Image (cartoon, rainbow, N blue to C red; front, side, top):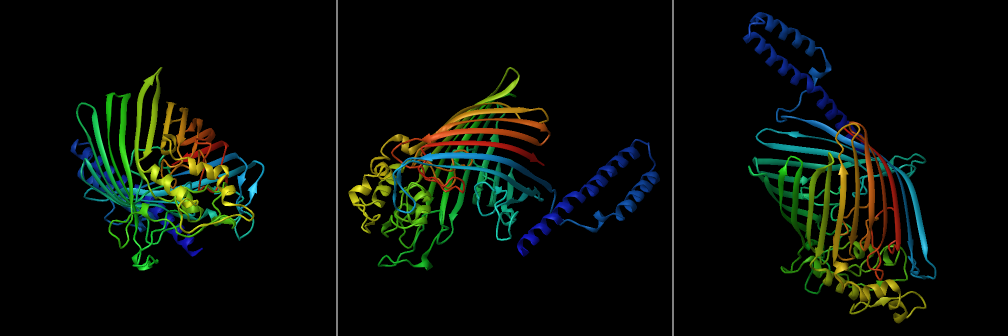
Length: 529
């Protein structure tokens, strides 16, 4: 509670500062106008000084004169957004292993409808000598993938609980532009990469540092490049990435040797303008993950749990169709579903924008391929008993042969050998724009994400339940009721890419991890300020 009060108090103070800074700025503008009138002979020097004295006297009597900003701040802008949402999701799953280690004879289904909101607000601006800054807060700091607060999701305080309405720091960064073409940033930064939600959700902001280059030539050609060094997991891990253990001579865990897990992203791209309304843009990005212990050549890909794979337990220790089994480690389901082992992903997003029938339009697409997808699949097979020295604890009354005959287990044993399991792609069309009152926008696209294709920690939770091995169509339409106030309707329908494999996910929405069919409907009202 004290932390929330402190954050809210700081925010209120900064809001007040942002508001009252308009008075000194207006005074400077009035002074320039008075000087111009004196030069033109409209006012005498004495008349101008009298006016200035009256303004100073009026300003000194206001509350604004009692608050001062640091002299280091050149400008400050207050901004944010509030989104209200109604959402309906439903999914079905086939028969198979259950979350308690049993076997379900019949297919299952799950439905969820929710009323939600998300609030984000912050401050950004310029310091002197080409430095800049940014701070933003967002609701629900416990779930980085959306910031949604579900209405009626009561906490220990009772009905209408406010526990998930807490706000956490969403962005906190400093930057510098040593030249007009070069930008350097560090902290929890806005994602500087040109990408799509197929690979990187809008709500996930990287932590670390980034260096950007962007230059536009006189012929309309723009070239850009970005290098990012992002900390994925600090020291002993955070539960959503494969834990990296420092090793002693006998292989035992040694916490003093824990090291960070990093993602390195390198992107180069271009944009070419044919005219004011027509351009083409594309880029190529490489994502790599590293994390080392005492062995200098060891990497994240080399670490997998040697513990037995327990299938007759409950909850996180049962990799089953409910949470998505065997993505790459014999650890609990969070690492099975979201480990960063064997990920070396190439992404190529592109778009072509033009104007047709007086309406802005664009074709867009994205493709991503995991160069280590086969290795990721091999490690998944090892985790279910084809080489795991730790052995397997089976459900009561089930033999190894019966276990390996289960559909999702067979999927792991036979899957991962096709290009569709290692590749993700998106292709779509958009018409319209959202700038002022009365504007509209429509979007239609198809998306397919292979089981081993991308980092499942980063993909969008809104469309296909933050799951890999999913494909389907998305259609949405938006309308601006007034400047800054937009309604959006969205529908998505999906199914599995590879019917032999599950659909692992880490979302807080549907808990199904072996979705055979999936539907999503969302109705949003968004206010941007």
